[in-house]
Length: 303
Image 1 (tube, rainbow, N blue to C red):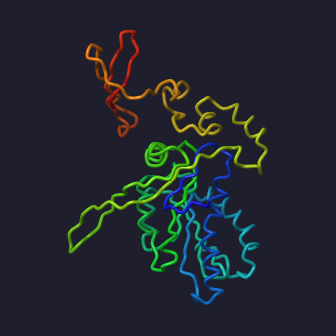
Image 2 (image 1 turned 90 degrees about the horizontal axis):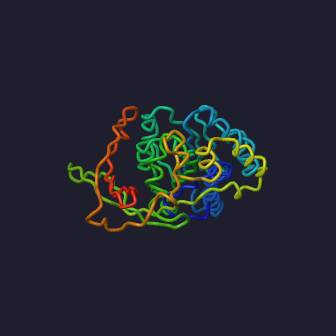
C-alpha cells in the first residue's frame, strides 16, 4: 500500500488478505483529498476509485465489508454516503468510490466514459487482458495532485483462465518485490493518423503468503488446503505460479528441477520438434524444439 508506481499486483497464496488490502488502498487518495478540502485548496475532490470483481455475488461480499467500515472512517458522510443504484460511496470531501462487476468480456465498454484515479481488480486472473488494458485507458485526471498518484492495484490467486497473461505481465518480468519499468504500447491519433507509441510505466509484483495475515487461523486454513490435490495446494497454499490445476503435468512440474540456465546445445545432440495442437483450447497450441543429451535427457530450447 506504500508503493507509488502505476501498477501493483499482490498475488499468490490464499488467505493473505489481498481483498482487504485492495479495499482500503484508495484511502491514501481520500485522506489527501480531505486535507485539501479542509485547507480550502479545492471545493470538492474529483477523485474516483472503482473496485472490480468478475460477478455480482463476489462483489457483494466486498461491498458488505465496505458497509461495515466506511461509515466509521468518514463519520461526516451521513445518509448521502452510499448510493445503492450506482453502487457508489461519496465521501465528505467529494471523492467517489464505486463497485462494479464485468461478467461479460465486453463489459469494459460500460465504463469507457469515466475517468478514474484508482482502479482495483480483485482476483485479476478471472479478468481478460483486454478488460485490464481498456480500463487502464480510463486512468487519468486533470487535477495536478491526483495526476501524480494514478494507480491500478490488483490481487489474485495463481488460478483461473487469465493465469497465463497475468504471470507473463507481472510475475515473470522481474524478481518478486522488485520495482521495474515496462514499456506499454499506447494507440494515439495525430492529425487523423493512428499510431502506436510506447510509454514507460513502473510496476511491481508482491507475493502473497498466508503468514502475512494475522487475522485468520493460519493452522486451520493451512490444514484445509492440505487436503486439496497437489496442484491446487501448491497454487493456493504456496502461491506457486508455475502450476495449473488442469494441466497434464501439474502435479509433477517443479521449476527447481525442470528449468536450467541457458547453454549452447552441442553440435552432436539429436534434435527434434513436437507440437500440441490444443484441440480443446486452440489458442494454447504450441510447438517445441528439443535436444537430447547422450544420457537421454531432453532439453526444450525453443517454444
